Picture 1 (cartoon, protein in one colour):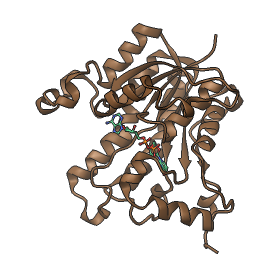
Picture 2 (picture 1 turned 180 degrees about the vertical axis):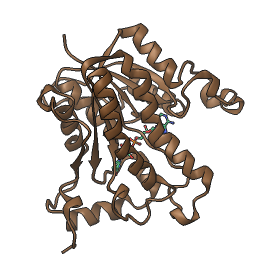
Picture 3 (picture 1 turned 60 degrees about the vertical axis):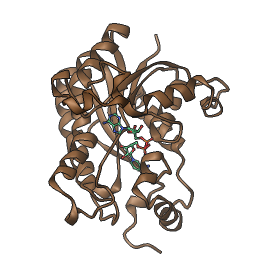
Picture 4 (picture 1 turned 90 degrees about the vertical axis):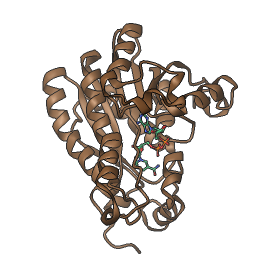
Length: 286
Ligand code: NAD
């Protein structure tokens, strides 16, 4: 049978998660999505009304088919972790069973197992603030939503990830180089994510035979990136200074994700793979 993938962090057709879904689908995988609870309604409505039909078209002429969309808030691991104000929030009222543990249980009940787990989500409430002006609360929120969310997903999904399966996250160069403007502890969250990639590769590799990698992506005009505020400058900077002077396409990352999750990459684990037109390798911009 073909492989089955769960992709967390898709709420429109503009980001990396969507492109990864398309590339995996084009390679024959069955696609399950995890969509942030507050964004779920509009995403499902848009899907149903055909708003994404043009971007659902695959290179082979087929269409991206989404087997099921699960409500997910990766900041909460179990129902006991959900505070009253969230439970009573009207943006959460229509959905249920959206903590990480419950979503993993639901996927198990619906499909039994998966082969591929993708984490394509991040959130930093103080991302526009310099690190020196970031509050403890904002910093910890960035780590919780952008990094621990991955540890938690892998923890709860590992038991239903088939042996030989693959797991993937998305990171950014700000983890290892100074990117002024990528604040709020988001640079710290990405550094932790890259370190966790190595430790999780060891632990999940030994225990479950699962590979764990992360893609360090160049700048893309996604919804999340637009919220940071300087995405156009980053794209212009990359186009001017990277070895390859072309704008990064979400599909560039999607295709690499499909490779990394395929048997072609069966000996690759614990790595950071750059899909950024080579920008990370520059020392002096010319
Ligand atoms: P995006 O807006 O398409 O994806 C981010 C998703 O995270 C959204 O769908 C949002 O609803 C979801 N999300 C936020 N908080 C959540 C939570 N608590 N639970 C579940 N879902 C939640 O934007 P994107 O740029 O494609 O981001 C995907 C990944 O790529 C992120 O890890 C991001 O840091 C990384 N990345 C982006 C860029 C870029 O320039 N866009 C560059 C490098 C890395």
